[in-house]
Image (cartoon, rainbow, N blue to C red; front, side, top):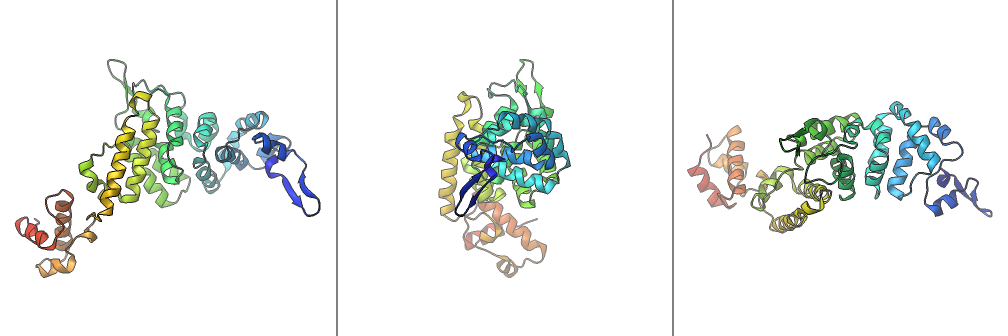
Length: 326
């Protein structure tokens, strides 16, 4: 690209033989010379063009964009590792949603899971955008953390296969979170994203439609862990902001839920077995052995999470006496 083809020479200043400074000032991405030849030399440059567009906010110059579309099939020959590196940076860009919206057929070569989403009318009062546009808006409304952005990218990719119409012509997508999670798991594994990233992104997708009640905060924090829980709220917030305007009021409830969760965590609540006021040694002193210890501690944690028992040593002992594990 012209903006990369500049150099500085001591005593001579900026060396710019291809108009890179002008393109930088204009805010466009243009290949040096024949863009088709540049992409044929290394197909990764096609993804890099989209990544620069997403991170810098620069559109592709017309001939460069045409060549990127014409040569997109070359992306099939790239290694998963190279594709993963570019996609990971692209999806975190400030203009990632715009790039997704403008160049879906190019991205679809390495992410075929996106192609059925293009132009899909969701036929739903909750949505004012087609499925791909909704996804792009959701991406733009989430923070630029890799797992959250990947989850936003794939959160509805299972909808095309789950699409049904009721007798009134209203669209429904029953079971799409689980199907989307399965498709995302395959894509992220195929592209060799780190295992930790795969696992959290898939978890976020699986639960993105969950209705989290304030009284169940401890349960959700226990299930997901604090970091993933807050990432889930961020994903749900972005998803909500990508709905039809009249259905975006849930954002306030999500923000309130996040504030309640932060306040709860400041109190250092019991969320795991390790947080219990009784431990394995205490269980042994009470006569439990082997697997019985884990079973008893699990029973106590359930009681604390459900509010049936306070996390205090004597109360936990009393609860265990009255409710011995089977």
